[in-house]
Image 1: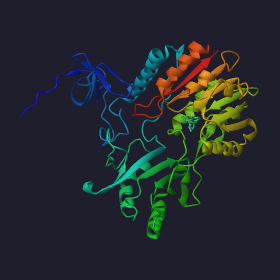
Image 2: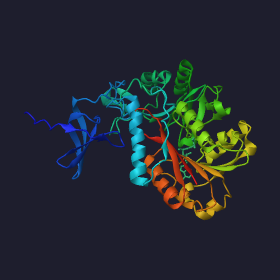
Image 3: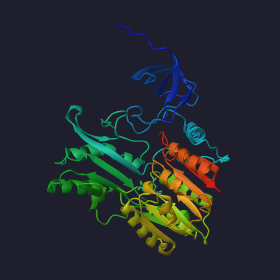
Image 4: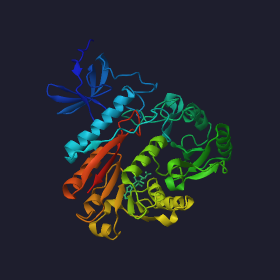
Length: 437
Ligand SMILES: C[S@@+](CC[C@H](N)C(=O)[O-])C[C@H]1O[C@@H](n2cnc3c(N)ncnc32)[C@H](O)[C@@H]1O
């Protein structure tokens, strides 16, 4: 039976998730794998009354920005969505997303745009969460990221965005897990890389047998990794072998800082871009020795300690008690205990009264999760509060929404903003913005 080919679609733009946007008979079609300026055939996998989601099945006229994806599993693995787009075009697309969000959501425009922060586009991921499934139909244990639009585990034996020494472990995980008695009770391997050690955290739903323990120790020794076991939630993870491995930490050499962390704790994923982001944030914030500064959503002190190193007094506030404890320890380790103070607080519940009770701040750094910092920015005083805010964002929509409050209600000017390509080959947009009044 022959099927009628779909009419060619002209791709007008990229949406925020990196899909090509086209229109057919007035209906928007979001096409995976298609780039602006291209003519493609498509196959829809979701049809709604006013839009469709589709996959490009044939590229009839290719964009000059189209490149051959480096990864064999591109299109199957759900990890990367942009490998078919030239790296510099990826960065430009992210910058456009940021500008669009400011214009349409925030109704604000930065006075100037910063040049994008970008670095090596491969081997950059210092953390990853791999799923493990024992699928008899597929020949046994699979270890990898989830497949695109599915909960199946991609059967992958390399990953181009993981450092090569970690990618090389992927094909070995399969045999390693297969040989364990608890192969059906080990749903996840989490990877965390520090400057001197790579840690694998095995999520185990049952204790290891004595024989398993021997095999796990042998794997760690053979591949120079430290293995941790996690019997329940992230806080229950503990080092198993070797116990004398170097400490898991990353460094910020420009600020003479070493930041130890637990493998299950939040750290920025791309250490190279993080260094550049911290440097840019400190240039924009310009902390001075006589100033008092707040670092909201401070995590383990990634921005707090550089602020303190520049001589300002700084209060770090964060929702996770574990991260606050880590931040206190890191401040002491780096000789900054006297310049820093940390508190645990749910910043989504911030009120003007709670903000006022924190005392006066000359400047703020805000680095919230994807949901943004609406309650916090709404709680800032209309007058007499901080004169400068550096806002780091992992979601341009909520940054733009919060920018609207800062600019149109709180009297700030959006001086400058730009993107940092923290996650090359994905649609993830990390950005930094400077507000002043
Ligand atoms: C994007 S991370 C930034 C962490 C840190 N600034 C860094 O660079 O490593 C966001 C932080 O917000 C914290 N967080 C999430 N929800 C929160 C809430 N409701 N109140 C306070 N902190 C929260 C997370 O624990 C996380 O540490």
